[in-house]
Image 1 (spheres, rainbow, N blue to C red):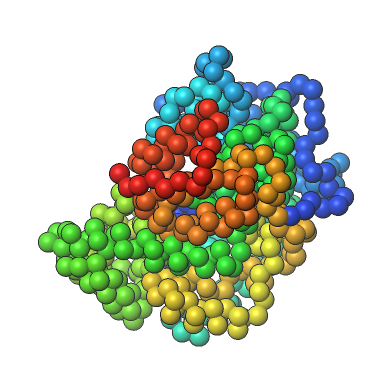
Image 2: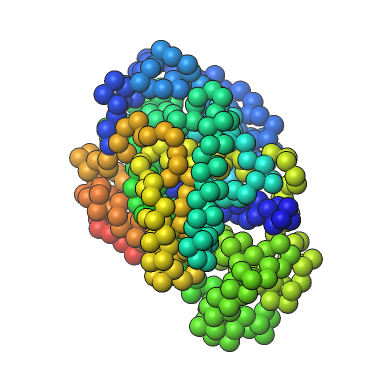
Length: 502
């Protein structure tokens, strides 16, 4: 069992994502100030290491724990900066978010530059990374997850039958209670997308900017959509890449993960079939799919190297995020088919911890849970999840019985403090939605949903490609050039546009 949980932690590292009105008594945004109050200095050592060889500056910006009580307890939000070195071209600030919720973004300016962010963009903006509230260096929260915890990731276990839903419900309830026990400072309930959007506006004000531009990936699209809706006149050029579909992740959004896997899996199946002589997973894409389903059922009954059917499905889900991971995924299947315990462990156990050591993803998992559960009400009736699992097992055979399963949000002790942020279509036309046609956790449908909600404020740039993350993170020239033109020159596509493959 310890081996299975250890490997499960490694898989959780793979799939950590990488997704209305204010309180009547809460101020909508930051206090306006005449002068910037940010004092830049050296970043923490872990950020320096991750950003190397690029050197970033770091600073903190104070924010209230509870915006309904602005004079109460405060936290420090850590931000980073890669400043423009071209004063003649500098336009302002470009805030960045990598997704999650739960992803650290302090090193993101350097990581995007290393991935090939065009110089025109880094000349036009100070690139601003951050650990949003609750994450990393910004008043981190914890649910106390350790390696021997039965909770290995925020995607529920694949439910092979009704009994598996009941078993997952017990784990989910225990996790919700555990989070409460570890919330010693009472900050967990204040981790919401709306509060994080308010934090963005405090950061904007502290930097002395009248407006800010924004680039967000995955859950970062929900945060960006919330900011552009709550502060439309303070939002400059907004790029939302790999869209969740709203300003929050709800049960329907998590169930769309299974849709995304169904739409993305054929790309891997085609790739693997073309390499049948190397991996032996099937001569045709249909045979590769059959191999997946057969192997998953076999592992349900007889795990290999601590990997059961649930972990196999979860690992496949995570390794479909990028086509560069296809070889590793094919090797995993191959070793499991051959029953090669040692090779399978080597592929998946590189980041595993042991025993009661704090999990390396404790903070990420905790923030994901808090934001997701605090943003919106989730069903509390276990039968609702049973019905959803049965429905999605038929609709989405690859992974539907996992993403429709019950989560700790069903037992979360805190009711949402306010309605989820409503997307506001009354504002400047400044939201460019960027979306691959095939994307595991954020299928193309999410981009279409936000396009409809933002209406004429937005344009949808669709890319005939597979993977999670298109701008800079993908390799489509049309997507790169179109998005860069918008960020640098403000040239929004006149209509929704399709970037063809290649």
